Amino acid sequence: MFNKENFKYIVCYIILIAALVVLGLVNLAAGSVDISISDVFAAFSGEGGKSAYIITDIRLPRVFAALLLGGALSVAGFLLQTFFANPIAGPFVLGISSGAKLFVALTMIFLLQYGIQINSFGMITAAFCGSMAAMGIILLMSAKVKSMSILIICGIMIGYICTAVTDFIVTFAEDSNIVNLHYWSLGSFSGITWDNIKVISVIVLVCLVCSFLLSKPISAYQLGEGYAKSMGLNITVFRIELILLSSLMSALVAAFAGPVSFVGIAVPHLVKTLFKSSRPLIVIPGIFLGGGVFCLFADLIARVVFAPLELSISSVTAIMGAPIVIFIMLKERRKAG
Image (cartoon, rainbow, N blue to C red; front, side, top):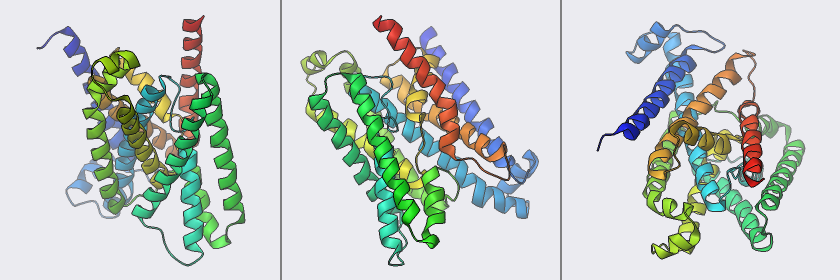
């Protein structure tokens, strides 16, 4: 039934979709080589010469990567916040992204020593194993540590340890392997191909549909574990589903873009504030779109501000996302006080 509340949600979705379209076009046009909007549209019709190649083969896959991976990371953050019942739980803060990064680095170095190039499946598998390893450590700690703030700090420490080990690996890798590995370890949406986009699209679509199907269980779980059990929810199975989905989406981002910080915390908070709702059925698609908007804007800044030099995407998202995380922490402290 159409009412004032539904109208508000429709307006919010229109805002997010409009922002995606505008930022997508700007990302296609702006860069070390500036291209007019008219040339961008001409490229889609098979015209434009050299600029058409830049748009369709270099920038367009990058735009899709920022949209899909940013959306996936944001939804992963929302699922982790649901699991831990904490607004600052996220793949990067809990060390999950760093664990994925470490395992990918180890796998890349090992295979490159034998002249073997790691494929998309290998990258995702290694990243997923790293994500699950970091998540496993967090879950073991959660059985011993009852304070959520202490658990978050433990996750941050795990992330630092994984990052330090990864840096050691990069430092002592062979010179021929260091450049690609070091560039990947900083975080970037560059170098994404259409073959990568096909793999990313399939995995993200499956994870997004599964997350959306969990909307009702998440709604029940948000009202308390006791209430969820009374509604017939199998808590153990539900938690496993949250862990697997969030770890797979975090692993996907780490495999193709390296570490991307604070997106998984900041975007769910911003979207829930925009919609003035935390209902999963409403906010999960919005969080996915919001993650795409956030990462497209961050990628634009990374490419354009110091062009032709490019900033790491993680540095830009940290600058954008860290103040939001600080605001969330202060807000939660005021509630507690």
